[in-house]
Amino acid sequence: QKIEYTDWHKLSEKIDEKLSSVENKTYNPFEFLAPGKSTGVSSFKKLEILKDAKSAREARGKALDEARSNIDILTWSIYDDVQGTALVSSLERKIKNNPHIKIRILLDYEISLTQGHSENVLRLENNPNIQILRVRNLDYTYLGEHEKMMITDGENVIAGGRNFGDDYLADDKWTDFDLSFTGPIANEALHLFQEKWNQQVDVQMQIDLGKT
Image (cartoon, one colour):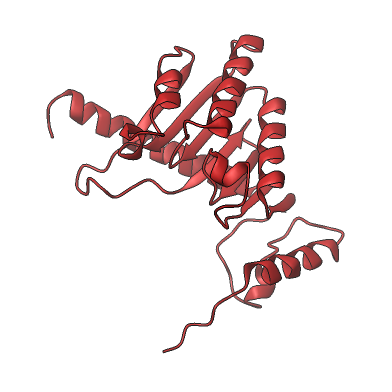
């Protein structure tokens, strides 16, 4: 059976057009893709599609600059390059300016041990004000953590396909996109992060107790 390829650029333009045509944006903007069918997604208060590296980089920078109480990051990798180092430096500045801010990071265990993906992770781990867990699956060792999301102050979310690295945020080597949004769905994103965090705390406890 032939699978129809969806052109993302055309689709994103269609979503942008739909968003700009309504005044009240507290709704599910993807409903028009499957009219009358529930997508299981909560309503949005504000939604922006980040279609290229520049918009994705700027949105992340703005969210980090404006964060006041919490920064939660879920990613596959924080690269040892300009953009990865920029994230680490930004988090360090946040702590210096606001010692009470809470920062948690979840990232893939296996990739964080490899060249090009390890130095910035160690730098973060050596900061006592940053909590970081390397995501491991004890049953399937090489089942990587590929979900990517950043939540600031429990209200603002950026989620999609981009890691913190030059290939994603300095140029468009990888054709990925993100959604930046606020609204009730932020609670669902925060719940997902907390669920994953607690799961990895349990995994780490099993490792520490020698139960693996």
